[in-house]
Length: 346
Image (cartoon, rainbow, N blue to C red; front, top):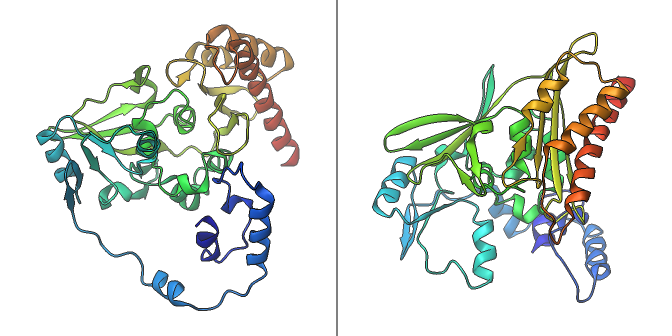
């Protein structure tokens, strides 16, 4: 199915088309051979290609047992009021994992993927507002020019199949301390737009997470959008360390965003991490220590030591606490090296 979808994308097939397939039976060679054979075939007109040009039909609202699929935010919030135990789902990629393990079959769900208002991307002079229902694939296609740092993140976020379904709001709503998007949004000073039947409120991403998978969002509220400030002066980079590049959970994810003046002094700093605490985390004290400084070797080493001293990660099956701490300090050093490399190339 991955090769089928790639075939009709009208681009040369590559490993990225099959990156979500973990094959421990025949191995990858047979899959790659099939990919090469398909690449050699001509791509002519057929029934399916003609059907694709017609576009997707507009789907109606639906209800099946404890599963609801409304068409508007108002309908979804009303359903939540009627069924307070129901869970919001969008791409349902987390739910799919639970169902494969025989869990989640007795719950109620309100699916948000048919709500057009959650699919909007609005570019304003001061910020980009991204609907909570926008998929990671759309973010890569439509926002790279405005948020180039996404190029550091999206290719290593799960696999292509997951990115076609997983949404911005879902990654935030899960509130996982290892959610890959979350350190990036923290570093970009993003705001989260929440809505309930009582109205709308906006929370700073930096204040949103309160504990392990706990947030300031009330049960009756829905994440409807994320606002990311437009700041072209920020030097932003994202880094993800995992045991394998694709299809793997982060050991550590980090995002750094600095603004420098013409003399190389730090005017603002954001240092954000995932996988090292009960929540995605920023380090305000370390950020403050950077202000007004040049990125000298002494400053870089001092900040690396402060980063390590500010964190207390756990050891688990993916990595030890000591290894995570070493990664955090070294990723900061790598970021500064990358900044210097960009200055030389410029």
